[in-house]
Image (cartoon, rainbow, N blue to C red; front, side, top):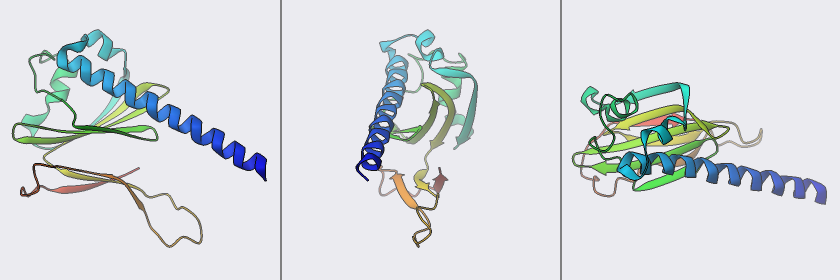
Length: 163
């Protein structure tokens, strides 16, 4: 029985290490976008076939313009996250710039960003829909939700992201 517990602890530590590395990768990306690095550094973090999802007004596709080179990263919309959270293979960042509240969900595989989901002016709830156990009656667990500290009076659409 003790071997099972030790094995579980080792898996948990490996899982936490991967989450920390994923979070650090995304934080490096944001620092580069804020002028503390080059776009060459950013390109090395992204898969060549990056999957992209966007929800929000078309005029708010700022990250796409930066990552495709349409807009220079130091002169573009300032993505300065207020909070960055790692959950498994996903890293979630949120921030507020002017009149726009944004949430980014980055998915990483082996240290490389393979998927990017961008939400503008949208409340987001991230839920784990995998069954915990046969005996568990709970349908899902909320893993993360928007914390728009300055925006509680604003009426914004809400979305649930299932992972």
